[in-house]
Image (cartoon, rainbow, N blue to C red; front, side, top):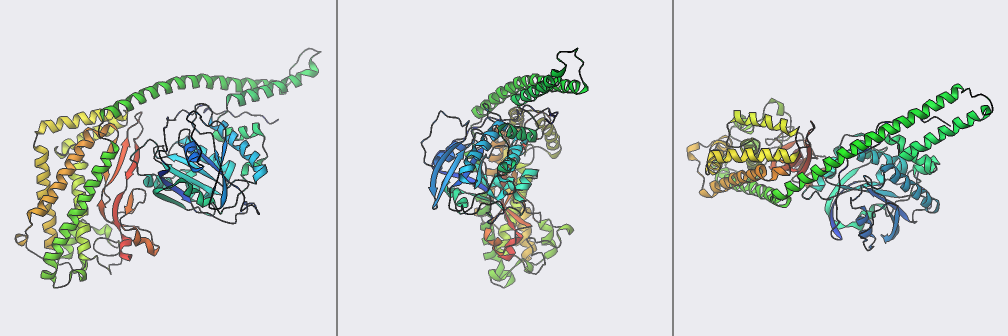
Amino acid sequence: MAQKNLLKDGFSKFTRRGRTNEFQVEHERFAVAQPKSRVGSSAQLAGTRKGIATILVMGCSSSGKTEFVRAVCSTPEDQNIKTLEPQSYHCTFYNRDFRLVDTPGFDNTAISDSKALTKIARHLLDRDRRDGGITGIIFIHPAGDILQSKTLQQNLEMLLKLFLGEEVHRLTILVTQGNALGLDLKAVASQIQQHDSTIFKKLRQGTPPAVIRPITHYRNRSDYLYFYSTMPPITPPIRHMQLDTIQTMDFIEKNFGYYEAESVNSIVTDYKRQIAELQLPSSTNSYDPTPEIIHLQKECDRIQGLYYDSQNSNKALQRQLQQVQKEHASLQSQAQTQCTYDWKEINGNLDDINTLLKVVGQSISDRLSDRYISATLGKKPEDVTTLDAHDMPQLISWLGYDAHTAGRASLISSSDGSTGLEAETFFDFAIRAQLCTRLLSNIFLPFHPLLEPTANDWLLDMYEKIKQQESQYMVGRWRSTTFSCITKSKGPSAGADYAAKLARDFILECVNPLVVHFFGRMPENIDWDEHYRAQVHQLFEMAYRWNTRLKEEAILLGDFEQTAPISCSTFDGAQMEDFDPSSQAHGRPPHTVLATLGFGLTVREAVGGGSLPNLTVIHKALVATDAYYLS
């Protein structure tokens, strides 16, 4: 018997968080990262296309697997069960019989991941003898779960090795809301596509490459079975391995890099048996151990020693984990109790800001087009583009462009310089982009909007250091208290006065120069009705109030940061959304950002211990891209 001398330090995997997730109604909001189907794989089983489609439904414990399966199969819920054994449920959709297998969840306190996978493998092999294979896997992923989790990545890697092999297109990842209410599911699905870890690269770079598409909208859960309704089954790799239950467990443990207690005991028992067998011939004579016996005895003692050491280490880690979990639960409870500013309200306020941005941009654009285009340029508004601007060098400077933007699509023209942006569209895009820039630099990014730059820089530097050492609750308390004290020290009217000043400055320093550079009008000939001034003032005032609530109240939940990509930057689908999806109909994906038209929002949650905060994209920034020139 081959010696089993590999026992790594990783008997425990304690970086797990309790998860709660309830599917509330039959129609649920999901985001799907789902590869397209490939037909005709060499591993597919001929002649079973119309047979039962077996789908494994997998995921972490309490991720919502069971609720998903029972909702699809219209099975009454049993509140008392926790899935510890694979259970099959049957349903028929799209003229195809399905067997959905509800599997034991990962990160389960009652069963290890290796045991869960072993149970699934044995169940599948039993089913495989009758059915001839599986059709695919649906993996339930709560949006709040961390993609960097080594456990998550190991489990995904192992389910491919055991059940799908290179057939990565058969894996569907359903990103669900879980208990992270308010997260943008489409953004999370996009992060899965963009993640640079080995397993996520494998999911999108299969051979041939798998295409992963995020889909976010309300629909019946059974719709996710349509993808598999015409797909033939495959023989899972585990069947070709011809392993029994013990060998399957051993294979999984070796890949995970740790052994279960019963596996260690089995190895030790086997060594002892070999030692006893080698000692039998000398039992009647004086005992003189051979080198082989000595080696086996040392190996047996070594493995037992490693196991006992790891057990002691595990107990200490379990005590630490329980203490950390209690502290984390207490801090979460305090944060939720003390923070009355919930996710729904935060999202609503962001929508209000972006809506007012759009109103201001379009209102000023209409005003400029109606008042100046015909009178100054003698053309119809629809015939005027940015290439007709009176003072192009000054307009380029006003936009903040430099030599690095040359040859790239911009608000001035397409990348080859042949096509200009329609004037009315240009005014709208440019005004919104300039507003985003000023709101970021003057309100959202400073530690406190009313502080001088030097004081802001000093406090921001201190804040970054604190975030790496403390939990979000402790960080948030410090941030909130400091921000509130600064606000009070400046007086009750300081915030309103500052917002009013920013609004005046925007008209005088931003909009008026735009009119001068584009139309050649003198500043003294430019006038704005109170209606336009009031809209701009309302936007800055609303942004100031929102920022105050985020910094004083919502900070206990996380550090909320607005995103507004600058013009001529590279488009990033993980954090940005093209405002005009139809512009991609020409088959060319967006590459360059023309302007930010609506803020995005991310949240960073400090974890302490010298680690960087966890980043989650809540809303993608709305941008215009170079693809607009092709539409």
